[in-house]
Length: 191
Image 1 (spheres, rainbow, N blue to C red):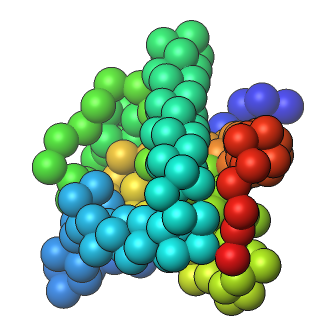
Image 2 (spheres, rainbow, N blue to C red):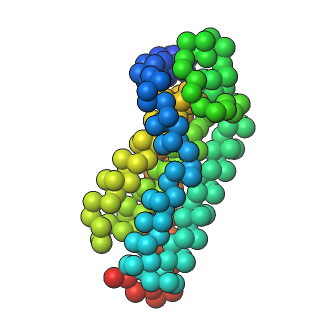
C-alpha cells in the first residue's frame, strides 16, 4: 500500500514538475524565496496593529513567530525521522525531473515552506476574519503558490506539500484558539 502511494506521489511530481519551462523559472524562484514576502508581512503587520493596537500586535507577532518555529522544527523532526530523499536527490527521479532550485537539501518529508505558509495563512485568516472578510482567501492563495513552487523547483513531492499544508493548517487553527484566549486574558480590545 505504501509503495503504491509513493508511486502515485512520484507520478504526480513528474506531472506537476514537468509543467514548468524556462520562461517561468524566475517567477517560481521568486515565489519560493522567503524574503519576497516581506512586503506582504509588512502589510499584515499593519493590519494587525490597526485592529489590535500595540499590546495585541505584540501578542500576535509573538504567536506568529512561535507558530513558524513550531511548524518549521516539526518539519525538521519529520525529515530526520522519515529520511525520505527529496526528488532532486533521489536516483531514478532526478534524471527525469526539472531541478530549478539553487540547492537541494537531503530529506524532504514534509515541506516546511508549505507548513509555515499555510500555518500563517490559517492563523491570520481566522483572527482577522471579522475585520477583513476576504483576507483568508488571499492568504490561502499565497500559501498554495508558495507550496506549489516547491514541486515546480524539484525539491518536494506533492505528498510532502500536502502533509505540510495539513500540519500548518492544524497548528494555525490551534494558535488562533490560543490567540483568542490570550487576547481575553490580557483584555486586549479589538476593533
